Image 1 (cartoon, rainbow, N blue to C red):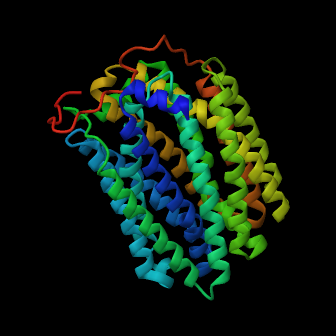
Image 2: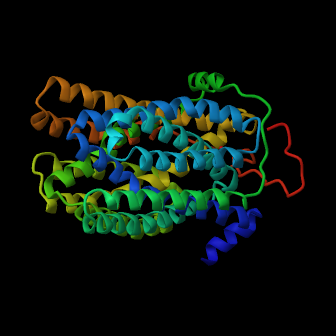
Image 3: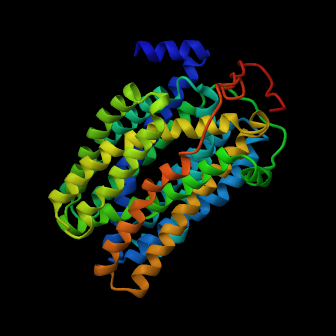
Length: 426
């Protein structure tokens, strides 16, 4: 904590730093309470992998579209307002889920669209604020601290939701947890008013930043890495929880799975933030990617609850090893990119485009797989292929070389209360 206080004082952003971490914690707690169980909710209504995949495909497609418009808004107004729009849309999603109830499978596109737009606004603003608040020397620590908070929230959410749902008759438990998620997002909206105003930028040239990949090798490499990251995440975000439910027929078992996952992650994020030094980032990314790829073998061909619990421990060790240095490297690459002060919004948008392009390809490939082949035999093979996505991150980033930190790479100062938002120049 002393290190965290020093970090906050050194950047003069203590208030906004803690507020952003608090909002991120509320977001994670809300998502951990409900998002896994939305997929189960849809599965129980339809017993269809295709329906659940359609819902998640809609989310990713709308995120790609929303990132463009959210980025454009972020150049015209305070990005805290963009964050607030995202959290408000996420609140609206849970209102809609509560209203449609057991007819949710007839509203897959609507639900996916609202959630995708909410994610788009929220994550664009959150990544921008993270980039602007942190500095190259402190990003590993910040990412580890934030990951620890998120893991702690992830321990509480799934276990509480699983317990509530399993003890309630019918779908009453789902209604309760969706309402709790709505309440938490309303809280996040309220806390967003305590964030300091931040600078706007004067122009929006996102397609020029896409073209910048032709001349900036580091930028090209990190976007390709994000595409491979998305290849795994697109399908794994829903298929694992559904498999756990198929094996156990018990929402509490899903909650227990999530609790174990988050508990180990909570410990590992601390270890990763403390011991993975800047000079060891690439080796850590390689190790994390290999471990994540190997983990799929635990659940691809033998679906037992014990195997899923072992898988949960395995990935919760591997993800922090990969994501803490990988997230920091990503922001450092952007910090060294051409004209980053004027176009940091566009760099974040393009980064997200490549990540979600990978997710979209993953979900479409999954839908084609189960359409043309027997799902029982084809899904395990698909999981092994898609699960190798994180192992391809290291070959993409191994040739990234950055010079020493520059002022362009550092977090940008907050505007003081009462100042006009500056026109000009995560």
